[in-house]
Image (cartoon, rainbow, N blue to C red; front, side):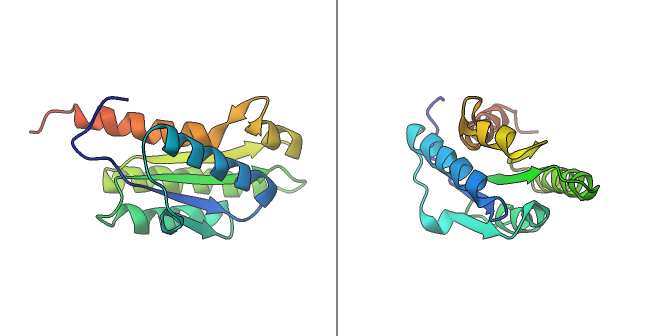
Length: 151
């Protein structure tokens, strides 16, 4: 990551649902922030009940001048009903809409897995930590946006 005139401040929104997974995603996000020289305090972390609620809070924090980027973290594990499909689709669409409407990077760090084993593998297990990767994605997008010439 290249040097910037100012260090960006990121908000992290994390779902409480499937906390065994989302706590690990948050730990990964904190690690990435620290490795990239960012301070992430408790006031920068917001909790919501589930993945479906992520877009609303993302919109609120992205709309403030306090944050330059937002990281949304959650875990939706497939069950026996179509609820999984509705939650995943709407959460993803909502997060994308916030990014497009605010012009700020908003990472979709929401795991959408078939089972808990897959989720844990992606939350600090053998497949890495998608919370860490979500922070890096926001930082890389901020860098790319900074290179876009003003009109």
